[in-house]
Amino acid sequence: MRTDVLSTLSSILLVALVVLCVLWEGWLAPLRPGGSWMILKALPLMAALFGVLKGRRYTYQWLSLVVLLYLTEGIVRASDPGLVGVLAMIEAVLATALFLCAAFYARLTAPSRQRKEGAS
Image 1 (spheres, rainbow, N blue to C red):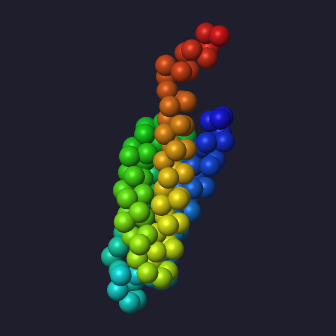
Image 2: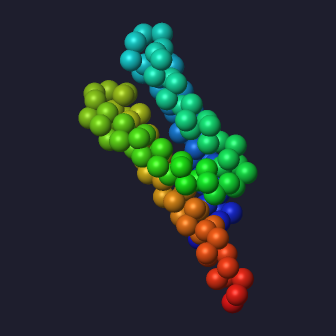
């Protein structure tokens, strides 16, 4: 897969995950009525946003590790009843897709791969 496709897909998935986290903990199904401090879980993802948009390999590397926390939360909370379970499953799917895109992008943009392609 080409790096530009992975970059675009990663950006879309990252924004979708940020929006999901903010909506989930702010309005849709917060831990406490009226919202909760759990809305701050979107901050690490937002910190990665500009690096992903600029195609910085290092950002993709650490994002691929951080997004596993969101995958874990999604899997753990997927068994919750009602809307929380549905939102958790969506979070798990988005986090899995973002992990794969970020990991493949970081792998394909490795300096060792760039030299091999240039020598051919």
